[in-house]
Length: 306
Image 1 (tube, helix red, strand yellow):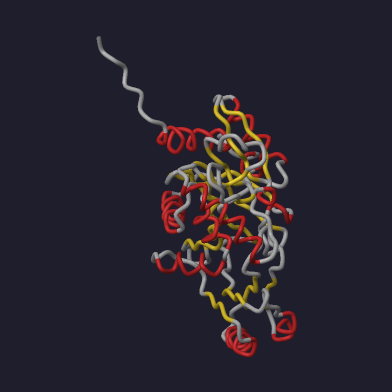
Image 2 (cartoon, helix red, strand yellow; image 1 turned 60 degrees about the vertical axis):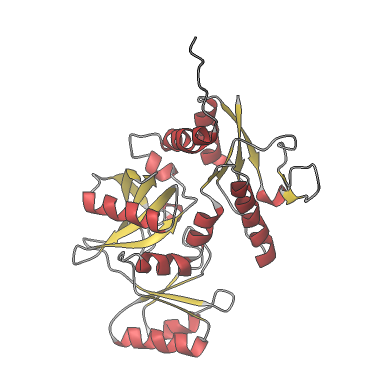
């Protein structure tokens, strides 16, 4: 029986679904926090120490969470992911993909650099310049979104609608991330979550928010949709631009009918999506990791012909 480490501080529903999927495919799973991992650079020892895997490293690791903390702590957690990949342990998604997507500024840059539609964005340290940009956008009739560079589920996001809102313009540890607000088509507020695995869009849903924030964690309602080929193609290209094995890609259709990528998630939740689609996401993830990443690392067994 193979062994897989699931990096998470809170297994919850997603951890249970992954464990069931991997177990049915002959792999046992252990939940491990990256906070408990460490390095021991000594002769004759495994240099990366993972609780429960002291005698042998896992066949693969599935990243379901990277804890927050100081810069040094987060760098160490990512170093563990990088080191495991260097030791030929499949890491899903790997440290590079996590780094690129957890940093909203780099995400915006990489999407734009790949020629993909994403909102007009400014990332800077100068507060006076940030206020000037915001004031200029408001004068043009545009709304702005102010986001922390690191965050998820809508935490810390504000919409700048009028000049008095500028008093609430706050930095993310000294860095301002401003993005032009994209108005969706139709009535109310909505966007789309497309789930991509190994270059294929496997499921999608529309999220209808109670406000302009469409996160499921904020009460948005989920409804299954027929995946538009153009939306699917955009989601796949965005995932490729950030070098991800799999991703949750958030796409909005604007009032002109154009699609725009507004968020990339390398550790996406899929409980809401699972509730409305007819595919088992955890099983698709397990199959992809095993067949494409674990089996690829195994030496071929050549049967002797007598």
